[in-house]
Image (cartoon, rainbow, N blue to C red; front, side, top):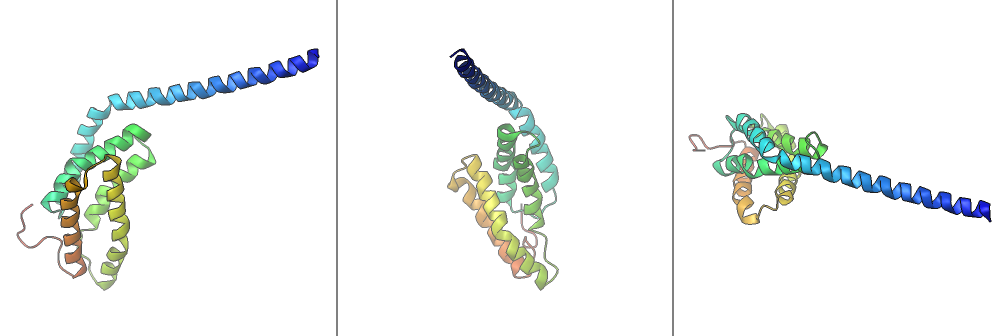
Length: 168
């Protein structure tokens, strides 16, 4: 019975240690999230500056330009806070800015237009997911999406993304 008692005591100790480790991990995760949350405003300013630089000469319409400067900055920063500054989620949100800009380059030929046509559904899906991540209302995102889709339609017809002389 002493041996049985020792075995039960060992199992109880192992269970308590496991619970303590799990609690400690949860506390560490919560602390890291809190620390990242405190960096939100600083990150927002840095990301906004980076995006402003990226889109300076991009053939964006005014609505998508504004969405990238505002809501998309929030989507990136939210990913940074939730998952970490260098997380895959944050990097993917940052890379999407380049993907949007790249999608507005006038295709050289029919093959390039077809490649663009194939990329668009994933691009739009990723934009929608980012907007969902910050709970951006459809009324706030749809004008920019409609504008972007009109630009893509122009590109697929062999025209430039922006009409000549279009205001941004």
